[in-house]
Image: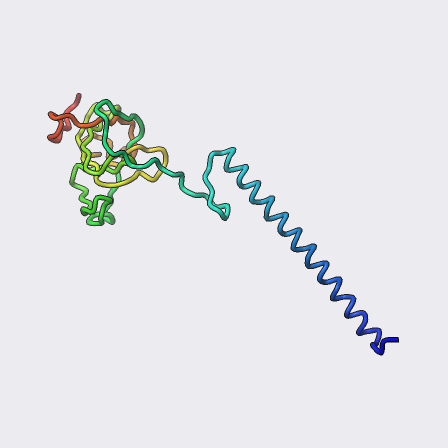
Length: 180
């Protein structure tokens, strides 16, 4: 006899079982967590969606800004316009204040200060804008225009429109909005 009551011995045995049970639960949780992360990674790969470490969606990495624009460079895609009254006066990526009445645009890769001719395919109009901001960050758009540039292109009421972008030539340095 050890001098301990049956109650005390039973408690000691329970604590050993509790430790084994806790280890089993910990291993099961680890397996579930790992399989969940693996499933999230597989889903992201299937759908080409970037995810964060914690399984949430992450923004896709954008290519870095171009150092210079080749003379024969052009781009074709969707354009939108941005700049409601709330954004008026806020700083752009170039450091200047946003002016909705200026002929400016946001582009993800073009060097800040670059002048490009934007041609709206739906209206036939074109305008030369200066890139002073980064974006667009919504959908598969290639350029965000100021409200004035969108108005001159005739796409202000549409929201988005298909456009072609090319570097502005020497004669294009002046703002132009005539039909091509």
